Image (cartoon, rainbow, N blue to C red; front, side):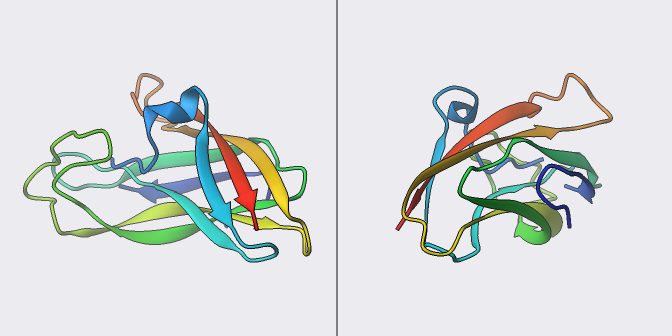
Length: 139
């Protein structure tokens, strides 16, 4: 697990569970005040279902809460969120990925945001290397 502002190297598997909009206007999520909420997952694997590395780095922490990461089991779907077909030999298999969690300060209600980088330290040209802006509505 990594705390806010720290790096987490996770050997994981290639489905990224946020869209390309993450690089532009951001991704939205809703969370209950003071409740730790999973808002995204990331994983990476090759055509033989072998895991690769994913690094999550918080670039700009939320003003009214915290961000944390934890290992997470993810079932590989036939298509990822980008519509790419996954290798058929991997579909249905469970791989270890990383989940991103947000938790507001107790009693905070409103909008909070944070930015993090998802990267593959072994491949600077990985098309899933990106900065992701999250806008969280806290109720």
